[in-house]
Length: 236
Image 1: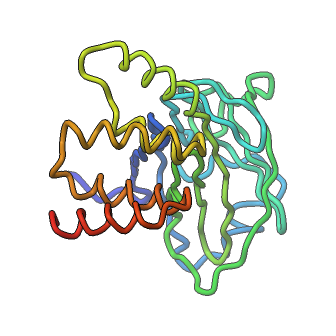
Image 2: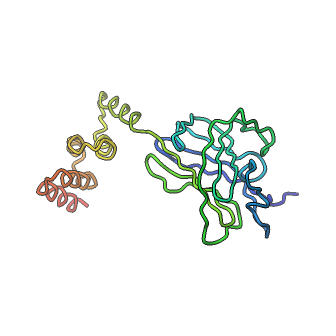
Image 3: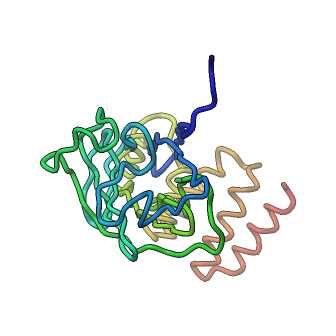
């Protein structure tokens, strides 16, 4: 007889940087109980959910508040407090909850402040939010309490190296290079050089003309920016 799980499992995967972060955890519900400070005691190690240990997996190295975390899977434990939580990444990925936990297997510990939510959340929830090219947050929420774990990733050197290597081939990534040098290197001149070459191969790409117009405007070439903008408008 199959019955609904009291604390159903959720697996979520978030593309991040040029890799991804994957999270697997179980989701208990409050069911009328007081959660933090009671069902989940303060100042004690918590499995951060229900059932087996919550697992977080990084495809690329990341940083959490300056602490470097290598690729791989980790158990995500927390020590909730009234105003501050301690976040623990541990090697014990096969642990059942906190059973088998060893402090010697900790990879990192950081502290984050709690925030009060306006309404109460019945089911324990974790989600990725504020996702940008090199930063994102993992939000942990239940009852009226929320905490955010900040992740950062350095993609610049890896992307730059891949662009430089591809430039040595017949199919040169001028469009990707234009975006990279504009957004990450803050080098509009090099960005303009590359988008111009990209347009030589794809002159009907109105989105590239619009990009070129923005770069020209940034460089103070208002006449050139207007010309490129009109070209984009006509093609679009």
